[in-house]
Image 1 (tube, rainbow, N blue to C red):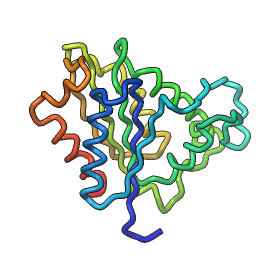
Image 2: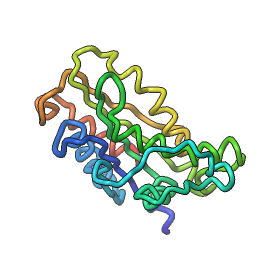
Image 3: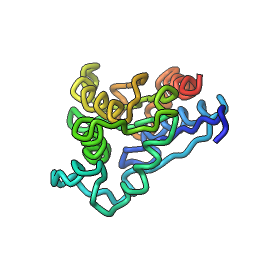
Length: 196
């Protein structure tokens, strides 16, 4: 890998393709590409991800024993320089499609706190940046508050200290985010800052 290579992984956790959070992610990935990053978008609801079993098998070697699509996602979560979590708010917290992915980072928690090891290679940690994008239909600005600790945990398990939040409330209908002045442009700019 070249010194200047910067890869951004976008995780679309909305069950609604072309929905508000999905459009926000597309804009952020566009901004990352314009800044010179290589980008990949993964549609999380299309993956076969099982819930964490709380079996604690990961306490032995830091690896999850379940055989599903998370096994292909784990290496990408460890190796990409930029991670975008695009996760809408449902029922006052992160959509289940995002939460199931985050729950399956239990093996990263075990690596950090049971095995006392890093979850990310040394050469990656300092360059990593994160971005949380979210939309909610509810009109109260505090609709995102309950999700913040979970998002903070997500980035902590990935050893990403510098992450940005870009959230928009009161956008319910599909595509409504495109009618919010400056919203998608803000997402594009946030995506470009991942590589800055």
